[in-house]
Image (cartoon, rainbow, N blue to C red; front, top):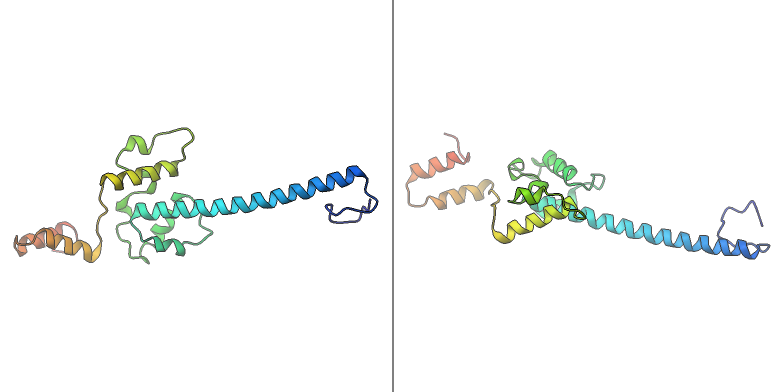
Length: 175
């Protein structure tokens, strides 16, 4: 056997049957390792995309922001929320803190924080978010022009003083 040869997977002319068998096993193990590394990379990407999507939906942020989140940001809801909070001004997100965190989403606190074996926190949060959407529980506060138009529409025909008071109560205009 050639001791100076770098690649242990290449058969040598003077190999014994045992050495050839070990080299074959090594080639198969490397092939399996490459396949598993590829699968892990794919699953990590899918998990990151799902986590980012969940946090953005929970915050009421446009899903297109996901493309702008740097890949070096951890794939945890907390890290993504922190990044969103840091860049909220850039995306004109003024009520980010009022919307709650992704792990708090859901009207039923006992389910949102419950420990269920075999179910991840992200999966529970996703379930709660879906449940709230399907049941209509909880509303996302409107921001900016949309909020102003909603207050005006809700108070239509009640007089300008009522509309102004409602706008002031929402913090949309100052006194």
